[in-house]
Amino acid sequence: MAFCCFYLSLVASADPAVDRPAIGPLRSLPIKHGKLSFYVHPKRPRFSSSVQPTDWIFSVDHKRIGLLYLYSTGLFFLVGVALGLLMRLELIAPGQTIVTAQTYNALFTLHGVVMIFLCIIPASLAPSAT
Image 1 (cartoon, rainbow, N blue to C red):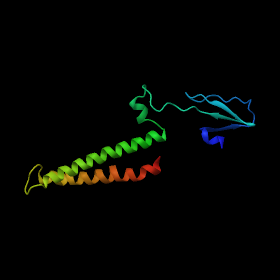
Image 2 (cartoon, helix red, strand yellow):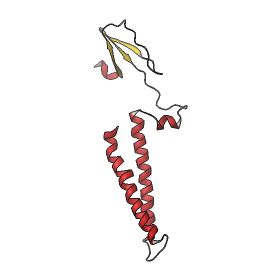
Image 3 (cartoon, rainbow, N blue to C red):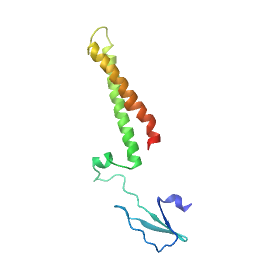
């Protein structure tokens, strides 16, 4: 039960005297539980003043990847809504009001592509991808 409170790495030693080296910038902390010795990685601060945009773009943290999925899907949803509103504004009155017929057809196609391939499919795959 005490294991639920810690983020345990998969390193366990029957001999508590065995020293494990720290991997990367995080230091491992030994936790002794009976005869077993576990090494716990302290949590990295979630929000830091020194976080760069490249830290988010190239992150392998599943929580950050999930948030990037959410943000990009939301952004493309807003783009699709804007294209849909532009098409509705064209249809507000008979004849050409804002765009030509060829541009309207291009907006219609772009709206469908954005909403299906950049909004609906990523949003449906995001829960299982991360």
